[in-house]
Image (cartoon, rainbow, N blue to C red; front, side, top):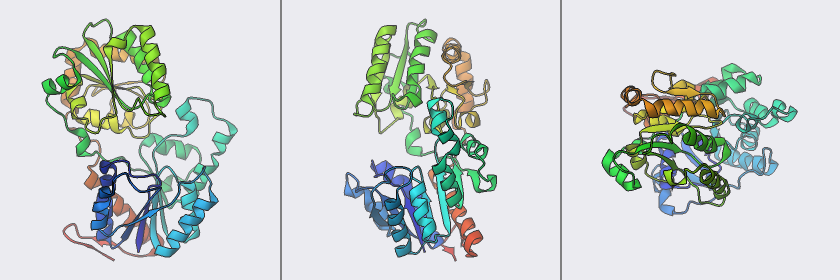
Length: 396
């Protein structure tokens, strides 16, 4: 029996590759052989070594061209038939792969939905096409189970008429590598900040959905009255897909007279200095599924102000461990930011409550839970009873 994990994209970093491994280890204990589907080989072959250790089959298939790609569906069908797959699991590229898996008779088909619908993300009124949502409806029909990364994503699917008993919340894992936090003094020195600077941070990208444009306006209006406030933006700003958006943001910073207060640090493989240097974390997104950045910020004890999107309302109790504001509401974001800038006692209270709080499973716990879902669905769909002794292999 095979588990096919359809990543669709390529493995971008060693860290990205390792994120799959706990699930593959647990699946092998369940008695499943494993196959990872990517679009093309990784930049470095050594990233595949952990997969080879558990005899994972690596397959490269072209990404689907559009929501419904019959060629992609056929390639997935052939692979599922060849391997006699029992479990097929995909993420954002879903309809065509699920079509192939269903046609091949794979009994357990899982789709993890990471984001809200495009109309919500763009903040526009739903069109008839949005309401029909052909691709989403097809994927929900084809999937044995849809895993949603937050209650907001689940509720949106249910509002479209998807059966609630086939849709469940399954949160992202909290990777310990992402929540390293280096000592404050050294972390600030690494960015060139002074010890008494008040550092406001955001992690993301300059694209509109991440709301950096809103944060820049709120920072100019709500933090500039304190002379030593600085804004730290962590995320890619120089790649061809990101630079045009950031150039527009940079021009707006110049207009507002805040350019010398903003550090765009670019993409960081290690966030330890970012978390160590931060006094206030802001998530200004127009839309999220389950924000890893917000999850990491809370776990590292950051006082947070976030827009009420995705998992934010699951993670933050407004006024108790952070502040929630409506999305795309610059005055509200400004007021929330100003409140934290002006109230060090409130920041300290939030920091104390948040530090080390357990809001998500570890990578290993996430893998255990996911494999338990596979086992449960195998039992429901095929009658195969799979169980794993936590101290030894699972028996089928």
